[in-house]
Image (tube, rainbow, N blue to C red; front, side):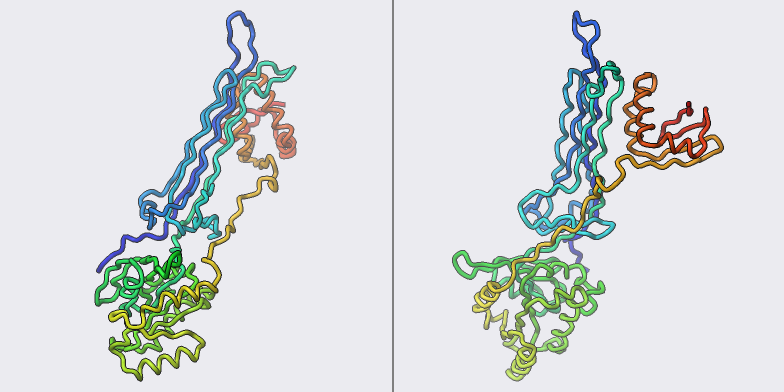
Length: 427
């Protein structure tokens, strides 16, 4: 059985860069006995940016690489020199790729335009010790570490951008039709599922008059539930403004054209109620081998439902020459191609406690503090330096952690654990 290299979904992890750490340095100069603190700030971590690229047509690259990490910012240096900001990581995807937050399925961005989209932001650089000098703390031996970048689990879905979608059962002549009305050259053969990937073709109507048509691989009964190839490619019809529903009106394969028409619409409705309401022009193909009675009966059936019917023969070009102008005129009255609005919102840090923490008794004389922000302060604290520890003690007091420890019954020399750090409690 033929397999397709067309990949239109992928799930990846994004890790934006961490900000660089602030430096702990002091001014050193000849004939200057005691220079003050001059540690520079850390650089910003790299963002992860997505860009639409017309040279790409599948998400194949993301099948083999699942984790994307931006560079970290450079650490601060002496003489108040800030570390360099990290370069951003630019990821190129086919135009029409929709990014969703993997856990919730909410849309982050629709890469249909040309504007780059920042999806994961890098962390801010930490302050150097020059920021912490005060009249009473003249030689601060601590600095702030850089903040971590955003982590995001992202699902990519490629939804082909086309004005018109050719839909219908396998082997009804869609590939032949698109090869006639456009410059597309799909593989054409007399067996089902010849087309394994969506085929795009630009249809020229006149000077500066054209539209994009997509041959969507054959849908079959149960496609919306994942049967056959249909489930993989129904998403590519979602953007189409107009559907050309191709039906084998001759029934040469022993099929009933009315039943085929109803079944395809049933699959569309099963996949998306909105898609089922999309305008359609029904093309009765293979009229050259159908009887006039077959064509007339199917025409009356379609027109009774308020739809436009056009008898054609893709093989002999009967009725095909006037099709592009008919479609172009219909498109002028329809809304533009659908663009998915962003739904995902980054967690609003302003609504969270600025310094959240929990204090838990984990032993008779042991307490554990869960506070990521405090771990970052500890990482930049010189535990051998009195002023540095004094600054850390102030953070414990101002945040309410000391009060909470007392409330939980902490005693002198009890063990306090904060992340990988451990120390004794002293009054």
